Image (cartoon, rainbow, N blue to C red; front, side, top):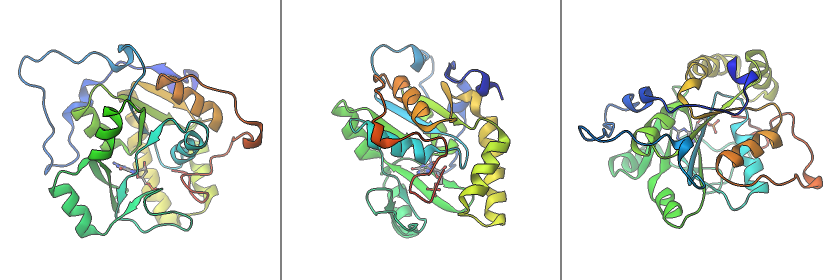
Length: 252
Ligand code: 5GP
């Protein structure tokens, strides 16, 4: 894959992204006729305030997010609402807001979500809008760890955000990580790999591609993209070649 040879390749923003809406019920906001093209996010001056991190299943988005949480507490990580059940170790309000389908539907209807999607054809996930707006208003660097459909929606409504794709070193390594974590049965793995193929094909839509070959390195690359200064890893935190996930059990 091209990303393997060019780990932090800045990408021109893709026009195609804003044209695709994942939800017919949520019309994609379009720029008014004749409106100027937004400046490429990569060329905007100053630190990025909103960064969107996407990437295929098992690539280690959750691990990188956890590393950010541990090493860069000044970055605010959005807590998504989801209809899926908590996994062991996941805390309501910390890892996710765990809600039922009715509550999720209400949040969508009341436009409380900045973006939302059904992921892997199963559960719904969405980013609560108000918390993001409050952090951005307060000047706090904010990070969303969401899927491709969600990234496309954010691109449509907030094109000034920075869009980062976390890529695996190779397809085989992605499969190895998915199988290795052992949290899905064969059918669910197939479902996730099908989504992963679609997501990998969308890599070129992102402003930056970071290859997750080593967690701390990938994290440092991400914070640099966010406009922050990477700092050395605390010796007590160790190296992280193998992702361990959003929780210890998981490696989205
Ligand atoms: P998991 O259930 O394994 O924690 O997450 C499954 C997928 O949902 C991951 O790809 C993750 O990035 C995505 N996801 C988590 N939160 C959100 C969200 O708020 N919106 C969207 N669109 N995807 C999300």
